Image 1: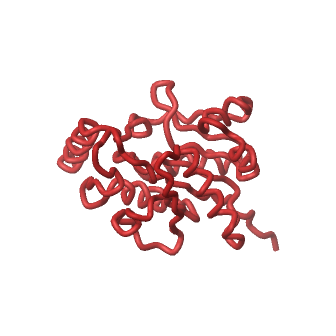
Image 2: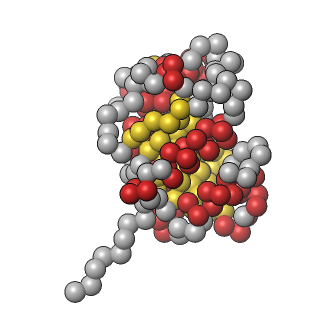
Length: 210
């Protein structure tokens, strides 16, 4: 009797530990519909099939992030006020490496401030990685990079060597990069009050359309 091939597991890291200086108030607790920004991203990533999912946030926000209750999701803390997103990615990798029973084949990175991200887009990126698990999957819109980005877990040590961001990783392995054309939701994040107002308007328009 033949056995079915093992499922390629994709974990996710959601960096959400920034100081929100351009916003002027914590992005982690902003509401978008029934969710916080980071709660929305976490729900989308979970529904798309990522497992496990690590949300990296600050101690002061851990109870206010509005995260879904799901056994696949857990928290990591980054309280360094001067840290960058890359530091939160490293913290997420540390959390993944300590969860030995839940080894991942790939690691997806999605910032916690993407209010329009949807399940079908994230699922398409996961499917692309599962079809070619040695690749670097990068969502794009109109030729420009966005998120999610998925890299093979075997490259985690290389990620720890980066100085600026994940763009360095794709630059080091251009032959392994697979671009996934998507809609504008993969490039829409929230950094300023105007970004937030625009996101609220688009989310409201989307609900009316359905």
